[in-house]
Image 1 (cartoon, rainbow, N blue to C red):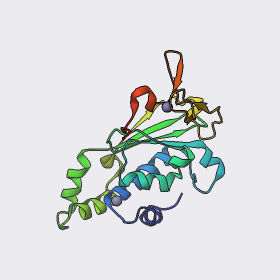
Image 2 (cartoon, protein in one colour):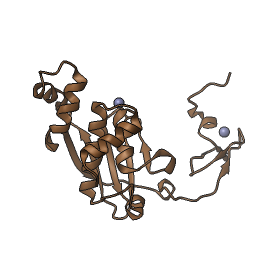
Image 3 (cartoon, helix red, strand yellow):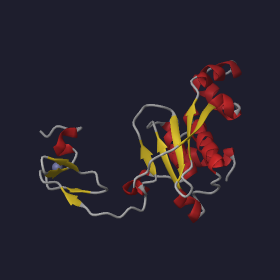
Length: 195
Ligand SMILES: [Zn+2]
Ligand SMILES: [Zn+2]
């Protein structure tokens, strides 16, 4: 594993700037890997194939988690649950072990008291989140994550065609409705309205 500073440099480059979220994300991911005993998920092929990460927010920290873990949406190793929470779960698919790590709500107030001399909240947090002991920053919990076959990065399955729109559907995301096979949009879960 690289050092915190090295990861922060990588994260800054990937994300476009250094911010409190990058520090939080890098430390969260480093802690997750350490707990799972996965040392080099970016460089080592065996380590890389072991790891699946669930993120619960689409903010700065998520980019940093991707940098440290090497888990990416396009590789199906990064799973997004849109819950608006600063938390992530790191799953070792080789052993079935999984740990969920959430940033403590109290860490924000603590950051303010650690560096009152700094004028901006972001600078206070950026520095404090580097220095803060793990236990002040994060709550950790061992969990069990059911990962069906189609959720695994390397899953190969048949593509199904939606009976309504004719578009192809992968990874068993189809829905059976009154004897027809539909995509989620045609089944009523559209996030868009056709014009
Ligand atoms: Zn940011
Ligand atoms: Zn459809």
